Image (tube, rainbow over all chains, first blue to last red; front, top):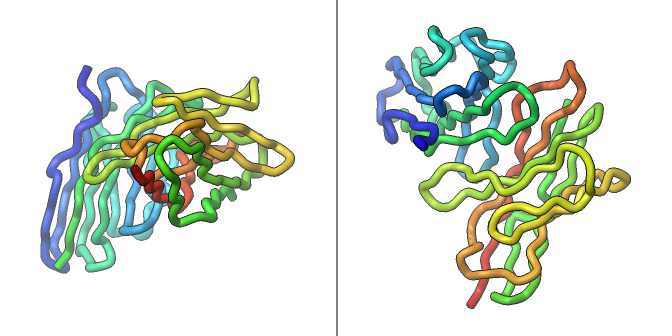
Length: 114
Length: 116
């Protein structure tokens, strides 16, 4: 079956611009996670959705970052007024439910802010 | 707060030899523990997990890991390394406590290099 997909695979933008990153989770997975991975580091948690609601957004670094999941499936991570420090690989993961199942990761979106 | 430490940035091993990639963790309650592998330009792939039960957990591609509560460790092992095992390995933890964070906390990763 299809895994987690993320679009675009690469995004280059200029400082100050707005970007949207999309995640399509595995069908039927109710839990969806966004992580950010900087070069040479492990993924860092950003936000977790259970269904349509953001159950935990404590990892969002500041109010320039926002994510939605309006129908409980596809999610969009939105970054306003991008900064060079936002450059990273943004990973999306999904799992069947909040229980401690493994999370299935997408290939990521590499964001470069010039 | 939960945290994971992977003390080795890189592990080098000869093909056919046993390998160990170290991981220690810290959580307020009991842990759920995971190992993931990342190949170049690819997403994280799940290897194995410890939830409860036997301390020795077996996973994909011949990997296993041993949960040691007293040492708060969850080292990844394989009896005989393959060149194709060369990749970046991440240990991750989640707090079992109901109030704990549902998301995973990852270590900084260990690059495994298996030499032919």
